[in-house]
Image (cartoon, rainbow, N blue to C red; front, side, top):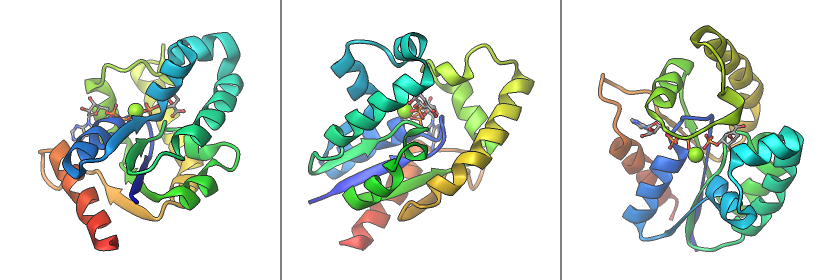
Length: 177
Ligand SMILES: Nc1ncnc2c1ncn2[C@@H]1O[C@H](COP(=O)(O)OP(=O)(O)O)[C@@H](O)[C@H]1O
Ligand SMILES: O=C(O)C1=C[C@@H](OP(=O)(O)O)[C@@H](O)[C@H](O)C1
Ligand SMILES: [Mg+2]
């Protein structure tokens, strides 16, 4: 039974890499945010607006316990998932946790390309965004570092390719078998 769990900061590529990885390995793909949105029939942004971050984290925690029970899956978490309650310890018990690790420059580059709405980042100027990322990444890193595996998403050259990250995670998991 395979259960691969991707964690890391917003924009690290959990959703994008996870989807492609599942396809490559012939596994089902679940994205925790998408799962929450379909179960609650509301967007993550609506849930933040209506219930605040605290309310969202409770829902996220409950939904995590549904989705992380499925077998033969790739699961992409939200960026904050490992940092609340005992979620990170739970994830390590459930599967092969992989931290997609990137520096603020790479993360900002990905966030600029991304179309997803992220309530925690809305309405911030470039300067505020960089300060927020630096600060929250430092607070979150100790949780992310509890993952069983770490993959550097920083590009070795100027080409930052999703397929390279997918191949790296797939190799790492194959070595485990
Ligand atoms: N390794 C990568 N190389 C290039 N672009 C990437 C890579 N990983 C993610 N991206 C891009 O970054 C953006 C954010 O990715 P996403 O999967 O939504 O991140 P997350 O789910 O971790 O927040 C997307 O536009 C995606 O195409
Ligand atoms: O880092 C966070 O706290 C969040 C990350 C988002 O997911 P992505 O990491 O996929 O953007 C989403 O769960 C929500 O907006 C909160
Ligand atoms: Mg995502």
